[in-house]
Structures are given as C-alpha cells and as structure tokens.
Length: 229
Image 1 (spheres, helix red, strand yellow):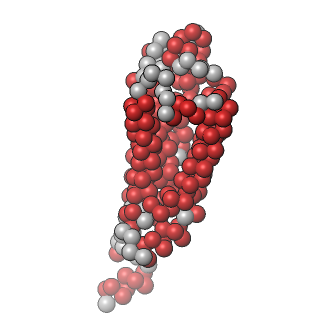
Image 2 (cartoon, helix red, strand yellow):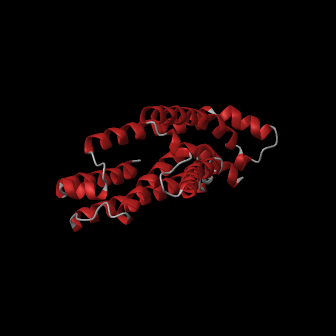
Image 3 (cartoon, one colour):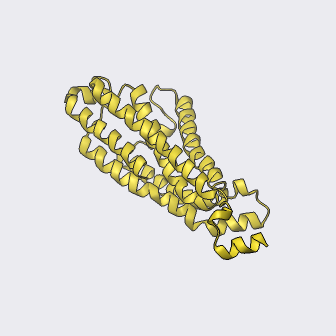
C-alpha cells in the first residue's frame, strides 16, 4: 500500500509541476476545456465513488455463491454480480444523458450527426463501452483466483488504471512542453505503481505459502525426547 501511495504521490507531484510550467494557452491546446479546479473535483469524486464498485463485489458474495451452487464455473461466478452492480451505473448515466438531451435539445443527434459519420460515432461509442466493461469482466475473473487475498485486487486494479492513464496522457502529448524533470517524475510514478502491484503479488504469494515444520533443534525439549525414542 505504501509503495502504491508513493507512486500516486509522484504522479500527482508531476501534475502539479506540469500545472506550474505550462501557460494557459498550452494547457488548452492539449485539453480545450481545461480547468484545474473542475478537473480536481471530478478526479476526487470519481476516485472516491469508484471504490463503490469494490464494495459491490464484496456485497455481491451471496450472488456469487448462488451462481457457483447452480453450476456456474468459479472463474465466471462474478458475472451475475456485475449485472446488478452495473445496473446502478446504467440508470444514472441514462437519466443524465436524457437530461442533457432535453437541456441542449440534442436528441436529434442520435439520428442526425450534422454531416459527421453517424455509423462511426456509434461504433466508437460501442467500442468504448465494451472496452470499459471488459475491465470489470477480467477483474471479476481475477478476484476469483486470489482466494483469501482478493481484498488486494482492487489496489492492483486502481494502480494499473493510474499507470496506464498517465501513459496514455504521455502518448496524447498532454505533457508536451513540460520539462524533462517533470516527465521523468511521471515516469518514475508509473514505474513505482507497477512495482507496487509486484509487491502485492509477492506478498500474497509469501502469505499463501504453507508454513514449514519447525526444525528439530528448534523444537521443544519434550518433542526432541520423543523423537530420540
């Protein structure tokens, strides 16, 4: 956990340095709707609320157990949990989209893209949705294989999200114009985050290893006497 927090801190510090180094024009060149305050609030809110998904998996254990009892393979036993857990996200997203459609009078855009490729828009939308869902599909599969240490799976999941989102930002030239030191800082943060997942894995492996029997010289005198007999 400490290693993971260290990686997050490095990535955050790199973001602060980037904020100081880039002019307002450079920030908006990378992100047209750039707003540090709004971005910070959204990031904090999204980070806190994303933990609810981990709570959903934990609360859905009875559904998982019922699925296994009724013949579902263990590795796919979290899929019924996703049906219930993602229903909440579907509801809030649907309500919000309908609200924006009414507010902006944009419902017609579902059938009229204004000269843009409507089919391509739908394809990219579907691709984004499927890709987003697959993270939980594979996450659910992974948690079933972690035994008593599945509590650490969310830490690994979040660490990889932060690492790859920063990598994507680098590829998208969001860090263009920053100093070498700032870019090195975000690289270091990514490396530390990836290292933290390895630390969690090694720790779980060591904890799950069977305990070795005590050596004879370490055994109590009574046990040594019985052995000598």
